[in-house]
Image 1 (spheres, rainbow, N blue to C red):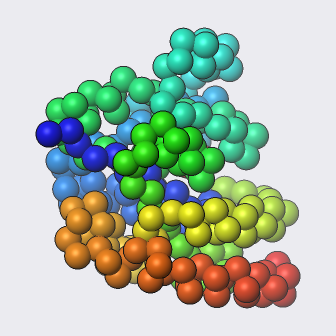
Image 2: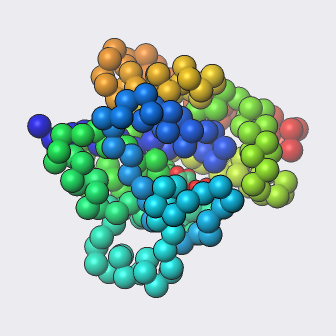
Length: 211
Ligand code: 5GP
């Protein structure tokens, strides 16, 4: 039996990378795709572990060769999911997770309509801003831009199949596994989570007062 394909997306700083890593550590049968990117390696990151760091020319070549399942420009850099490893994992019956942005997730859904799209929500704007500042990766002026982008990503989140709030990370990773293993995931179905997304969208005004 073919494995199932999942995309996990959410705003910058929401902690989706940590969440996905934790879920994959809890269930090693899951396949986690390693993306290609043209951005620089950050301190603590490793080529072939966090990403495959490639040149603009190599990225162009892979686009021409149709070697990406999907690709997108995010925050000024290009990111793409290489096809072959994902296809192999699915053919071997493993569920595959793509931790990608909302545009990439939409492309994957067009390519494979049975893709299950999972959106990761912050508990509040305050929490998201706190995490963006705590990771000390972005200059403070970029934090406001990322929060504004987050608003548009949340609007896209309304089109996903499931949404998980990333409050306490172990609990959120277990919630993610419940969705992936289809263990009574109804609680996380978008119809049940829509109110939380709408509440965040309606309270975006708070961002003006916290920035
Ligand atoms: P970062 O540079 O902080 O690791 O990632 C920036 C954004 O790019 C995140 O939203 C992440 O989900 C997204 N991203 C990472 N890999 C891919 C990919 O292969 N395709 C797409 N579309 N987005 C990706």
